[in-house]
Structure formats: structure tokens, C-alpha cells
Image (cartoon, rainbow, N blue to C red; front, side, top):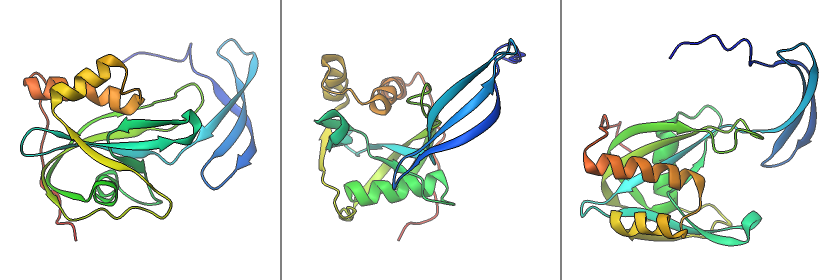
Amino acid sequence: MATDDSHLTEHTTAREELLKGHFLHVVRETVRLPDGGSATREYVLHPGAVAVVPLLDDGRIVLERQYRHPTRQVMIEIPAGKLDAGEGPLVCGQRELLEETGYVAREWAYAFTMYPTVAYSDEAIQIWFARGLEHRGARLDQGEFLEVIAATPEEFLRWCQEGQVVDSKTLAAAVWIQNVLAGTWKLDWQAPPSQA
């Protein structure tokens, strides 16, 4: 759908840095509005991330249970992590899958990109599917604690419906999982270069 969005687009006229921490980078921009007025926008800059839907040969989905401090809860999530500088999305997905779950995959398929918090961050998360899994042992980062679990698609979708899964990337992936497994949506599987 090609449209002219000039009547909706804002243009940045100034930027100031509010916070540059170890993880968060927050800026405030002054923008010119479509009607010529001005406003300020504060948001988090993010390098981007990759999340993976790992499918075991028996049909189960590999998931994680991880404590997320801002929510004060343990969340059920698909494996994910932020892009390192200069890192490609597939390489990031391979790295995160191995580090967090201990699995490598023979085949990968890009599904979609999502923006989980468009009102206050430019973060984009690419969602990939992985299959043909081989377990080689997790390599968690220092200070990272999580539990790897597996669920049938039916269990996973029930957890989503019942509110046990509340993480946005995982809920968005659930739509794809349901449609891919039903054969409604197709994925373009590829065998990436081997992973050491």
C-alpha cells in the first residue's frame, strides 16, 4: 500500500541527550508537526534485537522462564537478545539461541519485524523460526539466569490465552506459530553457514 504520509510526518529540528547508560540511551527531540507547530518527543534509542521460535523435532517449542526486574515477574518468553554492533540479525539469532538455550539449528526462516513500544522507543525486533535443533549446552552471560522449558503448541497457545504469557514479542510470535503450524502462512527456510 503506497501512500503519501506527508500530512502525518514529523520532522526533527533539535535533539538533546537525556541519559546514556550501560543499556539505555534516552533522547529528547524537538519536532516540527505537520501543521507547522512544534512539540517534544522523548524516547529510547535501541540497537535492535532478534527473537527466535525454536521448534523441536517432536513439535514442541523451546521457551524460557526469566525474571524481568521492571515487572517484578518471571516471564515465559521465546529466546531473544539485542544486536551487537555490526552484527547481522541471523548471526544474532544463532548466538542468542546457543547462549540461552544451548541449541543450534540446521534451518532458519525469517518471519517478521515488530516494534514492541512505538510510543517511546525505536526498538525493532526481528522474529525468526529455527528447526533441526541440536543441543550443545547453554552459554549464559555472567549474571544471566533463566530456565529453558518446552511446550507443545497447544500448551503454549493455552498459556497465551490464559494470560500466563504476557511478553509482547512472544504473543506476537504466537500468531505466526499458529498460522505456520496450520499451514496458512509459509516460511522460507534456509540452511545458514555452519555454526561453531
